[in-house]
Image (cartoon, rainbow, N blue to C red; front, side, top):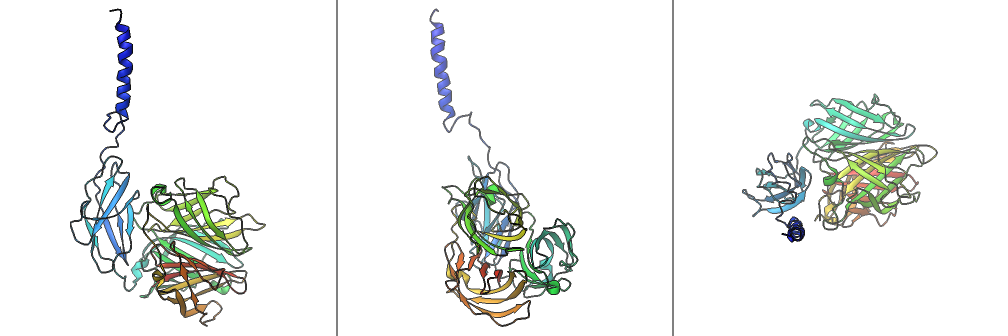
Length: 473
């Protein structure tokens, strides 16, 4: 009996060690288990030109969702094409063949399980055909840059009813005002070719074929010229930092890369172009940063970007030096999660300068297979342009681009009444969708992720900066 205490001292540590080793194994009852991922329900599909949008409610115990598709019904985990695994509750499958039926299911996944397949949905991508007034109906976010004597920005939300009447649910401008001016668009009308106008404000614009994006110009009274962008809010689309802003890590393709074009009004009007990425920490790193004034490139991780569930984006300073002269304190991500439009005021100079910035994402999912080639440029585009200066100019028209990148104007009109067609030009596109023009070193642009929009900026022969947005027709 005298040796019992020695046996306990020997046995207890051994038992504790065994339990600890078991806890490190995959079968440990002590290891945290999230539980089985619940089968998703409520999957819905919407067909568009060359793509299909999917949305679904969140499933219990899901940390991500895997999308499977096929061109025949009965798609499953075993026989379907695996499109992607995403953490958000929406996804857009692009690169599809029009007039072909596609079938989709999704599964919920977590660290320990993958659920059974959701309900199956199908849709047929196709050219959208003629526009109708009803395409305007719904809630829209808007961002506006004003150039001229009344330089500034405007942003907010509005609702357009079935008759085209506009009701503003929120409004703010760079002067801090919260009531929209009387000459802001109040009644919008859409014709069958996608052209939009408002007789009261002088607004003229075009709608994208996906019916979710509008670009327009307005020059009421010929003094202040506006570049107007509206993005439609789509019910059921939820945004998250993890799913829509954060980078993917070394095993998922690296950072979430972007390109942005920017135009400013007020003192020192100029364009700005940048390329970079957002990391897993949501902090920004730049690989390219240029403007006519040759600004200093901000330090890596000098700013951080966040997004709310409703798609509102904020950028804030993160401490590294040198810091950017301006961050986008308010922006909005598009429903297809590939574009962010934002406005801000640059107070770094003696007088404020006003900014409109258009971010376009290069990769939207981990190890994104999407690439760009000159052939993606081919098509006819309607465009709207703003030249920002003390005597601003707006213009609109039509550009046709062939598969080699040769671009020519088939129509053109500016706010000074000039209708003479500008000279053609040649575009090159790299694998990230960035655009260049060998004949114009001031030209910088980007082809959108879904290949339906061009954003371009440059300096004209008189030294005036411009930004144009072209939508494929």
